Length: 436
Image 1 (cartoon, rainbow, N blue to C red):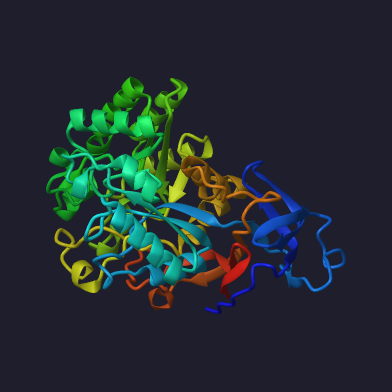
Image 2 (cartoon, rainbow, N blue to C red):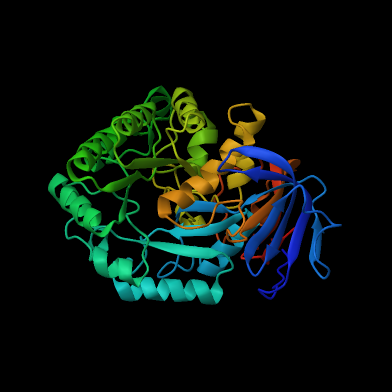
């Protein structure tokens, strides 16, 4: 990796590029001129011959240029689990994957349920990170699902969303109060939908494949039950609600119905659930033990269709580093989770190359849609927008070697996979943060 810092006033132009506009979901040939950290001009008129003298010129030779990716679900080790990941290593991995904005989950030690912890995390990000890090705070104290967090104070400290991250709020009354409280502050609630009593003891998707492996399963209903309850509470309270991960056809149908009813509801799915299924677990591959578990092929296809028709708004990496001691175990005992920041684009391009999604639709699910949910100005290819940009070749093939990853942990489900699509340059506010 090569990192070069540019003064904010330096002008930079990417020319001879295939510009991907995620808002219009269109493509055009041209260039992008960056000045003072923002996009100053773009389109076919931005060429090597037309940019001002003294501008740093980057000839993209036909590569794609799009807004940098906005990831709504990443687990960062700080504070408390620096042996698994730090802000420095997570942001380096993000930059290498074209991710320029991260939303950090609050399941840390201590949990992000206090304004002082929010302030600590944001300061650490400014000091050690190379991409933009936003933070979610817990919806309930210590993410235990009982006592509500101080949403107003946490918003004031800089938290941008509220979630218990790895857990759902089990008690309906507590969830109703949380949604009402969040509504009054205009805050976003992000729920991980899983009924703990149905999921307890399960380690993979319930069904024939789990039975063959002799492993206890988790049915899709464990997700759908909590999601349906929450959607009824959203109708009751009017709060903004985001289903953090949907993994089944049942959940996609519930979200579609809620959107038809006009509820303020959005959702994400993970790149793993879009591109892998339970069959990939094979001979007890623990790097594919995830939460929620990988589902069957029919469920995966329902998720792909949900992204294509807009029912599913965003695609997340669900970046969750686990060290060797927690992964090199029997499948039932291994910790769930996989790293995903550096493979987010290449794995997503599998859907494009297979004809399931257009390239602009994929980029929209990674950029303007998540940025719109958070209410931040990133994720757009427009004059005046932040110059958070990624240059990539969507067709360059490579075989993923886990030891090449920049994350502190290497628990990738794509180890040894043949992938296409390599990030060549990542800019944050016009500054080089990664160059291949």
